[in-house]
Length: 275
Picture 1 (cartoon, rainbow, N blue to C red):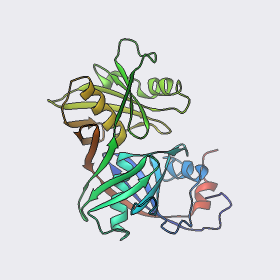
Picture 2: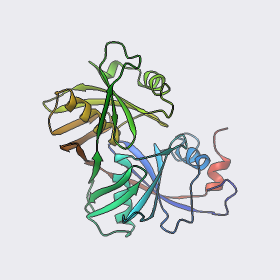
Picture 3: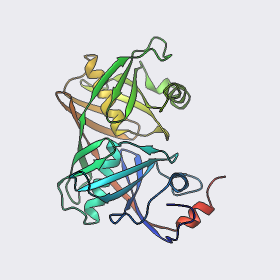
Picture 4: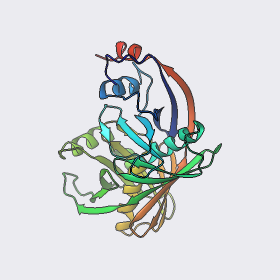
């Protein structure tokens, strides 16, 4: 959507998955594109509505029932969000776009199979294949670090106590060493067996209360290092997610909650935006 748009009203819903929050626009006919400027203005927590990202739900493509377009809080496009696509599932079923409980969503990381039962507060998504990359020496001292691809890029650091880390400063420093940026996870084992505790720096957002792809990446790294098994409980500041592995594929499950219905004048949001 250009700042010169003639569209006077956007009807959005707001959802979160373990505190990772998104504004969702159902735009099946493709009449209301959202550009970087408007996404930044909407996501601003002081000058706008506030969210980690904006999701646009489009008509299906590539054989999928629906398609997903995602912009992070900085306005940049993102390939995929595990929590975001679960929020999309709730919004799409609520809007009557699909009946559920199982349907497919085309993302920039490929088609994902989503399961959401109408009226519930949980959803799951097949995250596809997880690719383990190289042990990294990206300036992380004594900490083990592993590059992981979940349809978007991650760097997972094994930390004794993630609560002691300056996530914003360290995450930003590390992701800036990669040409296209990446997400950075700070993870330790526990609090129980086959569980891990996570804090995450998301590319284009900063520290978030949870991250779906980050949870999968962290679980995959800890599994690669032999610290967890096929079912992993991921504890983030915003809540708990569960990652299930089947060979190199992962499935993400967890809470999803609708927060609000919103009617927004995009011109007013842009006029009030941070300068």
